[in-house]
Amino acid sequence: MSLTPLFSIVVPFYNLRAYMDRCIKSILRQSYQQIELILIDDGSTDGTTERLDYWAKVDPRIRVFQRANHGVSATRNFGVQVANGKYITFVDGDDWVEHQFIEFMVQSFERYQVAMVACGFYYDPRGRSATTKHESGVLNRKEMMNRVLKLSGSVRGYSWNKGYLTAVIKDNGLKFTSDIDLMEDQLFNVQYVNACDRFYFDTRPLYHYVQRSDSLVHAFDLQKVPDTIVANYRIIQELNRANAVEVTRKKALQHAKKRQRYAKKTDSII
Image: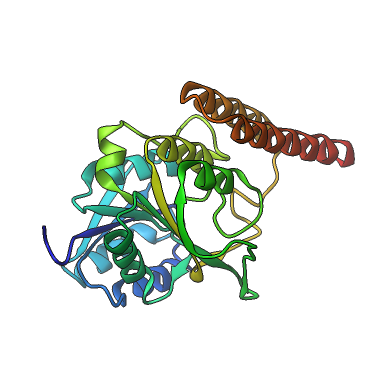
């Protein structure tokens, strides 16, 4: 086994010209250098494409792909398909990471022999970090599943504060769902956790999550409400398929009810 295993970092871009340089620079400055940076243009029209052409010439560890617009899920799936690393993570193109982000993940994978590593994160631009009542440590499947399903805390269902074993994703045929625009991360993580037994979480915030008012996630759209219903239904299906413990199924149902109450409340306001 290589003493410095390759780590793949997949970054999708769609019209993020104003943010992409900070993201890419933060990854290239990682203390752990054995990386491949997979930059994927998802049909941008704002100059992102041309800027990626520039970055492709800057560092041999960068691999740039240009694709027609298919959405973030299909773009991440393509990134997994072309990834060569033992480990893999997904960074959003308008976010950025601390310089020890990848080193922390590699060390945690190797030291604790786990299938997933998760860290805390900051909310930008105010620099707040997500709070958690949990301590750092190794988790079993039930413990990690409960944290992935929670709407609060430092784990949640996001993919960008987590590292994965590439082989687990490929061998189990796991994919980000392309027919929904919300909660696709959480559904993916539920499927991944169900395929594994041992996980590690560290409270240190090493990822900067930039909340833009014009982003897809934060621009509320009533047409997207059905996506949350579909996602929650599929999560419950996945838990049932894997014969998950009752307490975890209950948490998934509670999560679904919270989402639906929020949708109804917002609908009544509009």
